[in-house]
Length: 179
Image 1: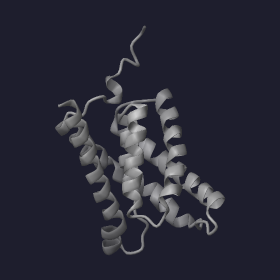
Image 2 (image 1 turned 180 degrees about the horizontal axis):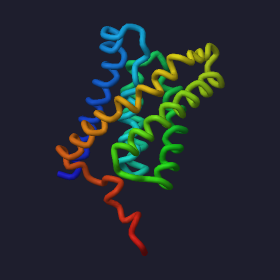
Image 3 (image 1 turned 135 degrees about the horizontal axis):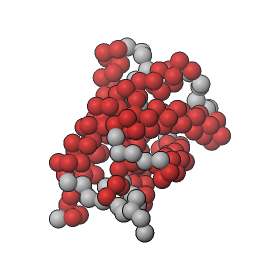
Image 4 (image 1 turned 135 degrees about the vertical axis):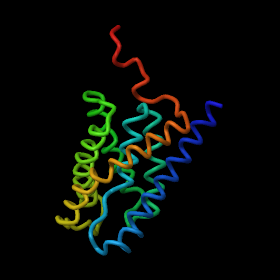
Protein backbone atom coordinates (compact mmCIF):
# COMPACT_ATOMS: atom_id res chain seq x y z
CA UNK A 1 0.00 0.00 0.00
CA UNK A 2 2.88 2.34 0.86
CA UNK A 3 4.49 1.92 -2.58
CA UNK A 4 1.10 2.34 -4.26
CA UNK A 5 0.57 5.73 -2.62
CA UNK A 6 4.04 6.90 -3.67
CA UNK A 7 3.44 5.77 -7.23
CA UNK A 8 0.00 7.42 -7.33
CA UNK A 9 1.49 10.62 -5.91
CA UNK A 10 4.30 10.60 -8.49
CA UNK A 11 1.95 9.90 -11.41
CA UNK A 12 -0.36 12.70 -10.29
CA UNK A 13 2.54 15.13 -9.95
CA UNK A 14 3.74 14.09 -13.43
CA UNK A 15 0.26 14.72 -14.83
CA UNK A 16 0.13 18.13 -13.15
CA UNK A 17 3.59 18.89 -14.59
CA UNK A 18 2.52 17.93 -18.12
CA UNK A 19 -0.65 20.03 -17.81
CA UNK A 20 1.37 23.02 -16.54
CA UNK A 21 3.90 22.65 -19.36
CA UNK A 22 1.13 22.40 -21.94
CA UNK A 23 -0.65 25.43 -20.47
CA UNK A 24 2.56 27.43 -20.56
CA UNK A 25 3.64 26.45 -24.06
CA UNK A 26 0.33 26.25 -25.92
CA UNK A 27 -2.71 27.70 -24.18
CA UNK A 28 -1.00 30.82 -22.80
CA UNK A 29 0.10 31.98 -26.26
CA UNK A 30 -3.35 31.33 -27.71
CA UNK A 31 -4.98 33.58 -25.12
CA UNK A 32 -2.36 36.26 -24.39
CA UNK A 33 -0.25 36.29 -27.52
CA UNK A 34 3.49 36.74 -27.15
CA UNK A 35 3.51 37.83 -23.51
CA UNK A 36 5.96 35.63 -21.59
CA UNK A 37 4.18 32.95 -19.54
CA UNK A 38 4.82 32.16 -15.87
CA UNK A 39 7.02 29.18 -15.08
CA UNK A 40 4.25 26.93 -13.76
CA UNK A 41 6.39 23.82 -14.04
CA UNK A 42 8.98 25.49 -11.82
CA UNK A 43 6.29 25.88 -9.15
CA UNK A 44 5.67 22.13 -9.28
CA UNK A 45 9.38 21.42 -8.96
CA UNK A 46 9.70 23.88 -6.07
CA UNK A 47 6.79 22.23 -4.30
CA UNK A 48 8.36 18.79 -4.63
CA UNK A 49 11.70 20.08 -3.35
CA UNK A 50 10.04 21.75 -0.37
CA UNK A 51 7.62 18.97 0.51
CA UNK A 52 9.85 15.92 0.19
CA UNK A 53 13.08 14.75 1.81
CA UNK A 54 16.33 15.25 -0.09
CA UNK A 55 17.07 11.88 -1.77
CA UNK A 56 13.48 11.26 -2.78
CA UNK A 57 12.87 14.80 -4.01
CA UNK A 58 15.98 14.75 -6.22
CA UNK A 59 14.69 11.62 -7.94
CA UNK A 60 11.25 13.25 -8.39
CA UNK A 61 12.80 16.48 -9.71
CA UNK A 62 14.79 14.62 -12.37
CA UNK A 63 11.66 12.83 -13.54
CA UNK A 64 9.73 16.12 -13.60
CA UNK A 65 12.50 17.93 -15.50
CA UNK A 66 12.52 15.16 -18.10
CA UNK A 67 8.74 15.55 -18.45
CA UNK A 68 9.00 19.35 -18.74
CA UNK A 69 11.81 19.06 -21.29
CA UNK A 70 9.39 17.46 -23.73
CA UNK A 71 7.62 20.84 -24.00
CA UNK A 72 10.83 22.84 -24.17
CA UNK A 73 13.30 23.81 -26.86
CA UNK A 74 16.13 23.21 -24.39
CA UNK A 75 18.09 19.99 -24.29
CA UNK A 76 17.43 17.55 -21.48
CA UNK A 77 21.11 17.54 -20.56
CA UNK A 78 21.21 21.31 -20.13
CA UNK A 79 18.04 21.32 -18.03
CA UNK A 80 19.26 18.46 -15.83
CA UNK A 81 22.55 20.30 -15.28
CA UNK A 82 20.75 23.52 -14.39
CA UNK A 83 18.34 21.75 -12.07
CA UNK A 84 21.09 19.85 -10.30
CA UNK A 85 22.55 23.20 -9.20
CA UNK A 86 19.12 24.74 -8.66
CA UNK A 87 17.98 21.81 -6.52
CA UNK A 88 20.89 22.09 -4.10
CA UNK A 89 20.50 25.86 -3.78
CA UNK A 90 16.84 25.47 -2.83
CA UNK A 91 17.62 22.59 -0.46
CA UNK A 92 20.33 24.63 1.29
CA UNK A 93 17.87 27.50 1.71
CA UNK A 94 15.13 25.12 2.89
CA UNK A 95 17.42 23.51 5.47
CA UNK A 96 18.11 26.90 7.05
CA UNK A 97 14.75 28.67 6.64
CA UNK A 98 11.61 26.60 6.26
CA UNK A 99 7.96 27.43 6.86
CA UNK A 100 5.05 25.46 5.53
CA UNK A 101 2.91 28.25 4.14
CA UNK A 102 1.68 29.72 0.89
CA UNK A 103 3.65 32.94 1.43
CA UNK A 104 6.89 30.97 1.83
CA UNK A 105 6.07 29.06 -1.36
CA UNK A 106 5.46 32.34 -3.21
CA UNK A 107 8.79 33.68 -1.93
CA UNK A 108 10.60 30.53 -3.07
CA UNK A 109 9.00 30.83 -6.50
CA UNK A 110 10.00 34.48 -6.84
CA UNK A 111 13.60 33.80 -5.85
CA UNK A 112 13.62 30.48 -7.68
CA UNK A 113 12.50 32.01 -10.98
CA UNK A 114 15.27 34.59 -10.68
CA UNK A 115 17.91 31.97 -9.79
CA UNK A 116 16.68 29.60 -12.51
CA UNK A 117 17.12 32.26 -15.21
CA UNK A 118 20.63 33.11 -13.98
CA UNK A 119 21.64 29.43 -13.86
CA UNK A 120 20.06 28.69 -17.23
CA UNK A 121 21.70 31.67 -18.92
CA UNK A 122 25.09 30.84 -17.38
CA UNK A 123 24.91 27.12 -18.21
CA UNK A 124 23.77 27.87 -21.75
CA UNK A 125 26.66 30.29 -22.23
CA UNK A 126 29.20 27.77 -20.88
CA UNK A 127 27.89 24.58 -22.50
CA UNK A 128 26.15 25.42 -25.77
CA UNK A 129 27.72 26.73 -28.95
CA UNK A 130 24.65 28.83 -29.71
CA UNK A 131 23.76 30.12 -26.24
CA UNK A 132 20.41 31.58 -25.25
CA UNK A 133 19.71 35.29 -25.61
CA UNK A 134 19.21 37.48 -22.55
CA UNK A 135 15.64 38.64 -23.44
CA UNK A 136 15.48 40.86 -20.36
CA UNK A 137 11.77 41.85 -20.56
CA UNK A 138 10.58 38.28 -21.16
CA UNK A 139 12.63 36.94 -18.27
CA UNK A 140 11.51 39.73 -15.92
CA UNK A 141 7.88 39.09 -16.89
CA UNK A 142 8.31 35.40 -16.05
CA UNK A 143 10.04 36.22 -12.77
CA UNK A 144 7.14 38.49 -11.75
CA UNK A 145 4.30 36.26 -13.01
CA UNK A 146 5.60 32.99 -11.55
CA UNK A 147 4.93 33.86 -7.87
CA UNK A 148 1.45 35.17 -8.70
CA UNK A 149 0.48 31.93 -10.45
CA UNK A 150 2.19 29.84 -7.78
CA UNK A 151 -0.56 30.67 -5.27
CA UNK A 152 -3.23 28.49 -6.95
CA UNK A 153 -0.53 25.91 -7.74
CA UNK A 154 0.28 25.62 -4.03
CA UNK A 155 -3.32 24.81 -3.15
CA UNK A 156 -3.72 22.39 -6.07
CA UNK A 157 -0.57 20.51 -5.05
CA UNK A 158 -1.55 20.54 -1.37
CA UNK A 159 -4.94 19.10 -2.31
CA UNK A 160 -3.28 16.35 -4.37
CA UNK A 161 -1.03 15.52 -1.44
CA UNK A 162 -4.05 15.26 0.83
CA UNK A 163 -6.00 13.10 -1.65
CA UNK A 164 -3.12 10.64 -2.08
CA UNK A 165 -2.15 10.77 1.61
CA UNK A 166 1.43 11.21 0.43
CA UNK A 167 3.92 9.75 2.90
CA UNK A 168 7.19 11.28 4.09
CA UNK A 169 6.31 14.95 3.96
CA UNK A 170 9.26 17.14 4.94
CA UNK A 171 7.62 18.66 8.03
CA UNK A 172 6.70 15.19 9.37
CA UNK A 173 10.32 14.58 10.25
CA UNK A 174 11.62 15.17 13.76
CA UNK A 175 13.98 17.84 12.44
CA UNK A 176 12.64 20.60 14.71
CA UNK A 177 12.44 18.62 17.93
CA UNK A 178 15.04 19.09 20.64
CA UNK A 179 17.34 16.17 21.18
